[in-house]
Structure formats: C-alpha cells, structure tokens
Amino acid sequence: MAGMAEQSYATHRRYHPLYHFFIVPVLAINAVGAIVGAVRHFSWTSVWLAIVALALAGMTVIVRTYPLRVQDRLIRLEEQLRLQRLLPADLQPRIGELHTSQLIAMRFCQDDEVCDLARAILGGEVKTAGEIKQRVKSWRADWLRV
Image (cartoon, rainbow, N blue to C red; front, side):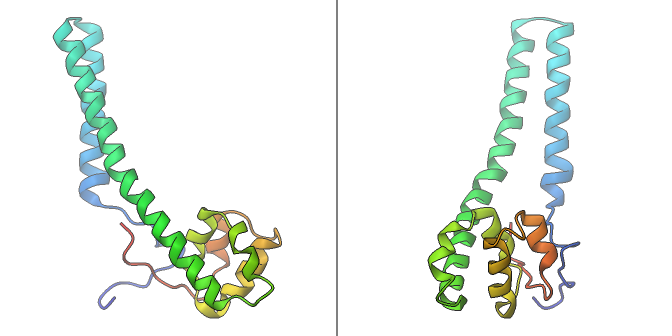
C-alpha cells in the first residue's frame, strides 16, 4: 500500500494500540482489582462485580480471536488456491498435507519461491510458521491482516 513502510519478518506483526495497549490492560487491571476487592471485602455484590469483570475480560479475548480465526480460514483457502495454480503436478496432490499454520505463514512468500518453500515444508526440512517466514527471501506484504 502506498505510504506504508516495508513489511518484513521483523515488522509483520500487527498491534492495534487501542485494543492491545488500552482496552486489554484496563480490563485486566479491572478484573484483578475486582477479585482482590471480593476477597478482601467479601459481599455478594463484590463477588458479582468480580464475575462481571472476568466476563468482560473474557469477552475481550473472544472479540479478538473469533475474527482472526475466520481470517485464518480465508487465508488458508487463498493459499490452497494459489498453490493449485503454482505448484508442479507432483506436489499438487500433497497440498492437503500442509497445516493451516504453514499455509498462513506461506502467504508472505512471492509466487516465484512458493514451490521451493512448499517442497521444503513437505520434505520436513521446515516445520514451524516462524521457520517458514524466516525462509522467505522476497517478502509479500499482507496489509489487510486485522
């Protein structure tokens, strides 16, 4: 995208300041405070406030993880379609052997290196998402990740 810094293995993680650095810490501190208050000054009201604080903290996790899960499914589908288009005939039947985390990591490699990377993964030479991303020579940025 125009005006965006280059993306690389070192800079590809995305943080949402409002979520990661304000909402999560505030709700975590609130939950801890409510629990401490319920323990120190027991009453049914303080217990209820601790339960509500924990529910809000739990909801915060769900609000973030559910869209990421849907996004991961879409990335998996996109990568499977890309591999069907780019892989040689001997590797195409093995696309189903690639784990979702591996496909998600592969999205960062350019089309011209995807065949070698897929061969390395399927051959057991590279396994984890981190190893896959570190193998990428020419980074294909993903600016749409939430």
